[in-house]
Length: 356
Image (cartoon, rainbow, N blue to C red; front, side, top):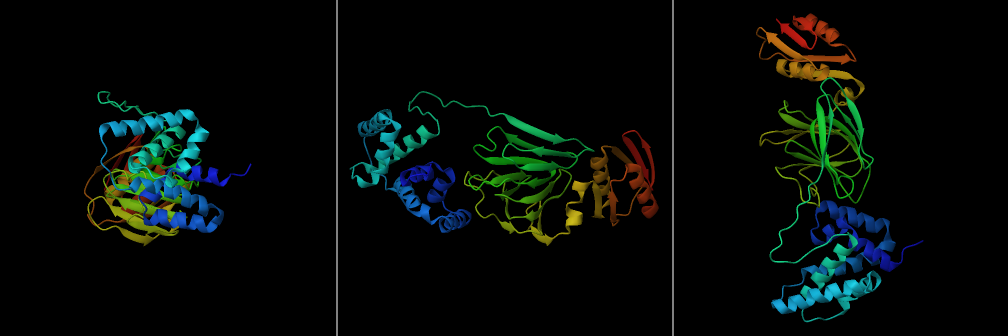
């Protein structure tokens, strides 16, 4: 059954991303909705009508007394009780009316409209404290020495590197698509033009609509690395979650083949072109050490193999370690390092001792 023009108007009124674009446009939302109009010219008329209704929220404020405000809200409540169909009609014709107190009336009507269709309730009292609903948080973790694949409720697939975890709440995929990452993960994001996908890693936020990318943000790293394989992402560095409208266009836009290094401190981020055989090697069980310091190597081996390494001796401060180990055991890796760097080692269960 095809939608009437009136139905389309209500679709846009109820579309959260559309309302955000009208009330607080940014470069990202402008680009999306302008492209949407070009691709769907039949929607332009309904979008204009919906935008006109939402724009009424920006009328100049007019002072009204307490009794007049009470009258307005009583009228809104009365109209909602008439029935959904009649109320829809009233709302569409609002812009044709010329109330003396139009600003307050329109604000009240639109608020009531949104509350009805999202199943929310609101009580205007002076003494009642707002109720706080506890939201359940979910933690998906890949233990040290193991890698895991997890399918998110929205259809996104996430591959977690060893010693990594993601945290999200029960509203993920319904109200928003935001999650926190600790460690490293590869994301194959399910496309949803209405709800952007946002990953928080340390103090960095990466936003995508439908794309594939990798983020590395272990606690022991001095920076966050984002590498894009397909689509595009925006990356923003901030200390707070972005507002519900997303990150706008972000500080940096990445395209396939590009990576970004974001330092923990207030230093300038740096773009780079990556080698996919190195950047995504961990997904296929390949451990890559590229110009790693000795400490970085120890941490990488501990995380990859789930062991605790102690070191005796002194190593050169400028020592850089390189190596590619394709699904090799810890003993095989240590044999290789002992040959190239003169390391001696002993393995006792989960405890490893190294010395030079």
